[in-house]
Image (cartoon, rainbow, N blue to C red; front, side, top):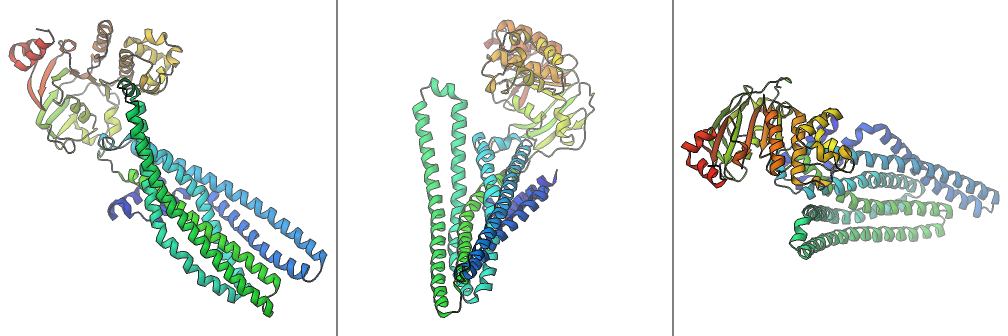
Length: 599
């Protein structure tokens, strides 16, 4: 774990310990963001130096104004006025160059930190178990990656920079006002608490509605993701109007929440501006009377008012930035919520031999229940010998697919243990465990990339020749060659350009290429026509040789020649044996066979 991940996870643990995520403070979020800035300290240093140079240059302008008025206008010395004008021009050039450097460096930091946070959150999500993803919508996660991190980029690249600049400018202006007129400065200090009251009262509300607004936007993303992914079903059932109405209601809800956030943020900015300008007007009135009494020169009053306007502008900027920071805090809470999600699957430390031969699999007296569900397995046991081909048969809900998920440690058993090659799988690293298991699921997974990359997903370092050989073994080569660009053809999202049988053969080729000692087949030929099924079954028969294989079978014709058939019902083994044995001894299996005309 690198330093960035450690800092984020430490803060996430703090959040969990302190209670709910609503307890995250602005200070904690800023500390988290600063931890991401620390690797780029030289950029930060350059930005800070540029900020101080620019602030000092703009503050020096006030002294130039005072000098020009007292010695140029009042003293009636045109040459002095010319010199002052040139000096002001030089100061403006220096300030502009420093501002460019500050803006560039801070914007770069905002983009860089935003990218680092995206990588950090994504890497963490890849380690989480399916339990987490069963409780959260994909569209919401995507929203956190896009809108929340973009908002943070704006906070770091713009808002934080503006806040620092305004703070330095306000403090510098305050010091220079004090040297010009201590009495007028006292009036300024008396006005500061009045300006801070709206910030104290309204900023928490801005933050609360900012978080709610981000949540509503996430709802929009989730709805879009769901409806567009299932666009065929939406159109087939003429559900466009219903989906549009539902989306419209969500858009309106997001707008209403944003309207409340905008109201409080605008109110915050407006109150601070009216208070700041009122204070400046009062100070100008008092200063003018001091000029009439001779206590101040016209140049000194002009310089003081120049600094007062700069200070007032800085306070107004800070008030606006506070609204952005509160939005950033709301977005950070949602990102920290993801980072704070613990991985329920604790990996072991042992590794399996990279040249491991077909191992024995022992499922010993396990008990398991999905979250918030009744127990599925109770005292379930089965042993699969090396190179044995075992078929699991049973009605939906019998627990067949769940066994696959437990073998891959997508979930952990609550009782008993599962052993692979004599080692409890809880003692094995997740990477090593899954490097020894290849799986072909009933719903073939196709990625939105080329045929080459889809098959190579099973072994990323494989050569093109090895990919083609795997495709030929899965009887996929012929139809791949007929595609527009052959193996370089983009298959589209979820393989929309392929038929169900073609997608299945791509998935089988991926498993063949992976070449792992344990093979899990979840009715891998279910989507094939009779001719393709025969060819692929032959390929699978060759693939299964020398491997420990578990096959989930819905069509018994595909597993009649398995070494052993295990009949399951409601998480229990009711019978096991060969096809011929079970036809004679087991009523449930015989019913399945008769329904499929295999008797």
